Image (cartoon, rainbow, N blue to C red; front, side, top):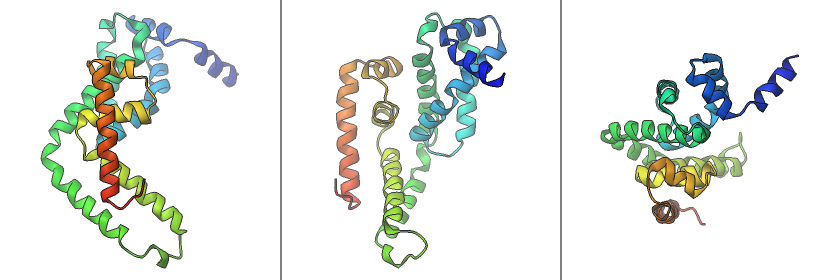
Length: 199
C-alpha cells in the first residue's frame, strides 16, 4: 500500500502540485518539498558552504511557499525555484563578505596539511587522504571565486542544468553564462594548480 502511494506521488507532475499549492493545499507543497529539498540543499551547500545550511534551505522554501500564488508560469517551477535559491545564496554571501579572513585561515591550514607526509598514516590509505584533500580544495576554490562565477559553475557542472535554464535563473544572457563558465573553469584550474594539483 505504501509502495503504490509512493508511485502515485511520483506520477503527479510539478504543474499539478503547484496548481494545488496555489489553492492553499499544504500537502502538495510537502510533496514539492520532498521532491526538491536535496537539490536545493546541494546547490546551497556548493554556493554558500555548510554554515547556516539548514536556515538557508528553510528560507528558500518559506519564500517559495509565500511567492507561489504569484507564479504565473507554473510549468517552469523548477527554474523559478533555482532562482529563489540563487537569490537567498546571493544575499547570504554578500552578508558574509566581511568574514573572508576565516576562509584564508582555513586555506592556510589545508596547504599545511598537504605538505605533511601522507605516507605516515596507518589508519587510511594514502589515496583516500589525497581524495579528501582534493575535495576540500575544490570546495575552497569555489569559495574563493566571485559568487557570479561560482553560481554558473555550480549550476552547470555540478547540478547539470542547461545553459538556457541558468540564464533564466540568473537573469543574464546565455552568452554571459558561457563566458562566465569559461572564466570560472580557468580560475578553478589556476587555483588548484597553485595548490600543487596536477590537472
